[in-house]
Image (tube, rainbow, N blue to C red; front, side, top):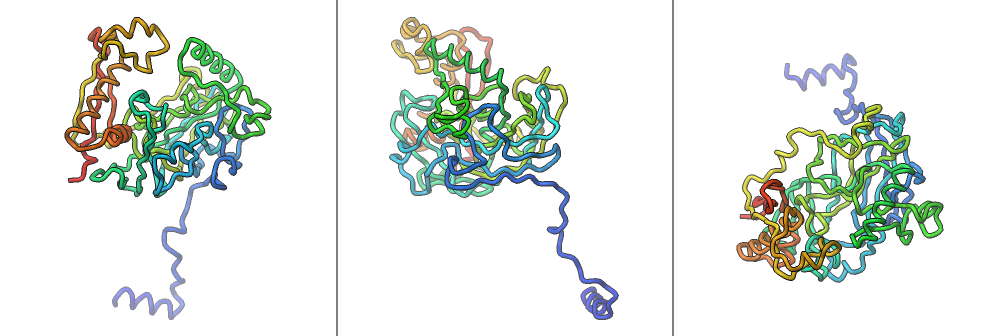
Length: 415
């Protein structure tokens, strides 16, 4: 007897119960979902854009729960597929980065380590890469706004502003971490203020646009002590490390009870360095699971990562590489060096043991290659470098010329 005839006969005889639905109905995970509401972080009770331990948790989860976080793009922007360069000028940098959370992890205490395993990133359909005046590694060269609007899938990103290019989906969390404690806020604010006083780039607390406003805004309870989210610190945050791919486990020291886990600033793809200042920025639905490692904060005092084949999987199948040395033109003072010994540096053409200058040298060569061999405009070349070129340290021993290379993923070019 054929199987379908047997089933029909059995059902008619009442000897076979009606079948259940398919495997979709069978679940085993406990999910804690933190959604977003409204158009912007200011409209969303689950969103914040500063760090302080007084920011209250918006959800609680047990270790092992699947935490599903709906994140916003890094600039909390109104950019769309139709955006043009002038729209970049309307972006308010006081609003970066909008983070979703914090989530209180039950049982976690100060001194523990929170192990966060990334399960999935489901990106929005739109992403962007921008050049913002005054921001980025080559901010002294690229001074005008620029935008590339990307159409995203779970395989590739394409853009009308970047014809002939398909950037592979290699999503990771540009910003992820835990809240600092009171003593960390004081220590980090103090050291950054000292850097600013010496002429370095430092971002002191800025209550304008700060969220949650009740804690960090102009009239907030801690308005002078809410740290900006732009610099990464020992609590993680805006690290922009592309190797933190799906499947890796990120380790964060806990500075407060519950840790205060947050996510934001998802990058669909990025080159090591994020040289233009942005990756392919997008919102996403992020799924993670946590584990508490009791007392491990005694020896893990800053973020660390456990992984497997993720680094190998994002390696290009073919590449082009430029080699950078700590060289510059006589009389040139790069913006990265303008706050220390500027007069003495300016006269030199070769600096000693300087990875920053070597990275700049490698990147400038790469941009020239992309212009010359692939017909890209300077802005296209800089933007593509931000999302598909990896800056890598070659060596730090051959004095005075340390080496940084720029590695272009040639797989992005459509045949």
